[in-house]
Structure formats: C-alpha cells, structure tokens
Length: 268
Ligand SMILES: C[S@@+](CC[C@H](N)C(=O)[O-])C[C@H]1O[C@@H](n2cnc3c(N)ncnc32)[C@H](O)[C@@H]1O
Image (cartoon, rainbow, N blue to C red; front, side, top):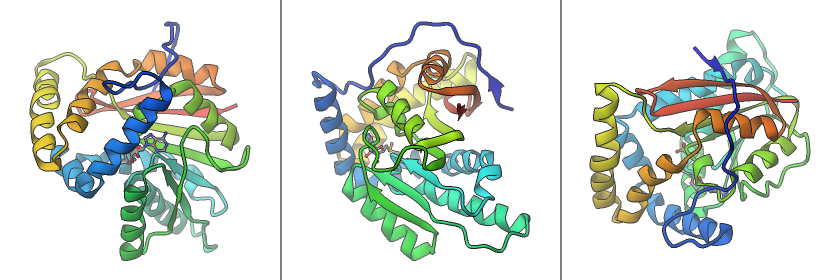
C-alpha cells in the first residue's frame, strides 16, 4: 500500500557527486561516462544482482499507472530509461489495460529517453526484437526535448538518483507534465531496520560492488551505487522537494526491506 507523505524536513538542493566531480557539469559527465562503459553488461548485471526482482519492481510501478496507460492518447515518458526496461513494462501494462477495458484504438508509443547512446542502442534493439510499442530519444533529463504540459505520465527507474541536480530534474518533469499528470520515481533507498534489512545492507554495500565490479570491469561504477544511495534524500526530503517543484499528493511504497521506494505524485 502507498503511504501519503507528511513533510517538514529541510531539503538538500543539489544532486549526485561522483568521486572527483567538482560541480554539476563534471558530475553529469562522470555519470555519462560511467553508464557508457557499463552499458554492454548492464542488463545482465541488473538481473543477476537483483535476482531478477528488478522486473517485479518495474512491473509494479507500471501497474500503479494503469489508469493513465489505458487511455490510448495518454503520453507516457520514461526518463533515464537506460536499456528500456521500464518503458517496456509501461508498454506491456498499456496493452493489458487497453485489452481489459475493451479499448480498440491504437495507443501512442511510450517514449524512453536517456543521455547515453550505448544504453539507447540496446533499448532500440530490444524494442525491435520483442515488438514493444516504445520509441527512444537521446535527451538529458535536465533539458528534456518535450513541450510544456505535453505528457500525462513521467516515470524514472534507478535514474533520478544520478542527476546532478534533483530540484532541476523535478522542475523539468513538472514542466513537461500537464496539470493532473503524474510522476513515478523508482529508486534504491537505505533499507529500514531489522535483521533481514541488515543482511541486505551487507549485500548491497559489500557483495554487490565486488561482483558488479568484477563482471563489468568497472569497479568504480559498482562502488558508486551504494555510495550514491547513502547520499540520496530520505523519502520525507524527496517528498518536500517534490511539493516545492509543483507536485501534490506525494505517496511512497517501499519494497525489498525498504531498500526500493516508489514515489508517486500529481502535477498541480
Ligand atoms: C541505473 S540506470 C537505470 C536505467 C533504467 N531506467 C533501468 O531501470 O534499468 C541510470 C540511467 O540514467 C541515465 N542518466 C543519468 N543521468 C541522466 C541525465 N542527466 N539525463 C539522461 N539520462 C541520465 C544513465 O545514462 C543510465 O542509463
């Protein structure tokens, strides 16, 4: 069940800062280079390191927005789409929701956008081979090439944390959403208390960087992952920031011992 957020904490204003990055421009360049390097092994590692639970989290996220996706004319954009898995989950959910509601009109394709071309190439290959109704565009999430108030839904999975400025990212999402449009941010967060959460924390901080680093050949990228999660705003901080950037009715659902959170909200 999604919990409504009550807010009141102070909000850190910037975004991710990979080691060595001195400002937002360097942070973005670093992130871009890192994802470009791990793109060839990204899907394999994602599914291995999450024991394929990442598919479940994306499917749940897509289901949350079935009420939007069932409208054939509704524009859905997945930013920081990587190799396209959330865009595909949205496209599949759309197909299911349209069939369930007896709608026969052809829906407009889901759009995925990302600023790393090797990730997009993989997304396009996967779309072609599986026949998904999704198209992909190169775009920086902080400067989206979409008109004001042109989208009904904007989602992002495990990408928002990597933005060099969270407030700019949210304002950009708010800009492209129509009033009444919705946002879904799926992210890793610090797990809660309890023995299982402690086991997961150990896995996430110690085992995952070793395995991910060894298989991808990029140790830094898989050290960056737990480090960036530790620095990511808490749910209350993120909710407050979302409210400041034009969103209301912020709700959070937590999965996997609290280590994965879906924040949803409505553009007012
Ligand atoms: C961890 S991957 C997540 C990919 C995908 N959403 C998924 O669920 O697997 C993060 C993605 O965010 C993208 N990204 C990070 N910062 C970005 C930015 N400023 N603009 C566009 N894409 C960005 C990276 O290129 C990368 O593909």
